Length: 294
Ligand SMILES: [Zn+2]
Image 1 (cartoon, rainbow, N blue to C red):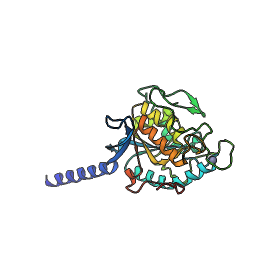
Image 2: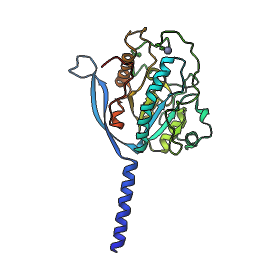
Image 3: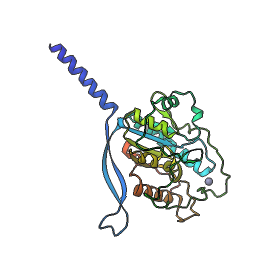
Image 4: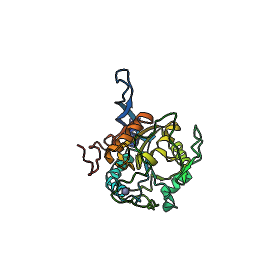
């Protein structure tokens, strides 16, 4: 009897330990922009504490491609990729589902376990129809005039901030190889329905978005912020793991990095809160080398 009890207790102990290791809750501060009675009509940063179960959380990595038609944008992706990979690794170890979404290059991964994992997830019906609009070869969620103002930056020149002008072309062939793909656990897709199927299959309620470019793909892609918010997920943007296509020669004529901050605040006002990688890594947030601000 005693032995059985002991065995049961030990089993239970292992079970609890295994469950906890797989799906530990993470608690972090999420930042939004809010209007209040005392703010005089101005938005103010508000932080609130959020606790998510890691096993019900997905990380979606948008368009961290191997190359870009804008050399400065490509350089910033290279610079961000290594610290991003470290955060992804920690998120995976905590039990989060990692979805790599290098748009229009998923055929590069044809036949791989991670790609098949997305294709083979059982079909699931989203609570609201997914966007059927099309831009740049995928379904697209356009700005929602009932929900958000115009973007605070003018990106009509496509946002290249290089000294010279470069022709716009599809320079990308795959996700940058500095970001590891775990074929045992991760998934690869750029498709809204496949992404929804994965989220349903894994019981995902919470989504962390990271990658580029915030003013375009991270907001608009079928795996992006607008779509994830529209289907009712709890969404946060990892604001130190993103970048914009913004040229300081365009409105509002601020530095590239201030332009990115303005778009982050736009997201925090109208779509979802943001976090930094500190929430997962416990380390200081990532900063670009060329960011001159203190
Ligand atoms: Zn450029």
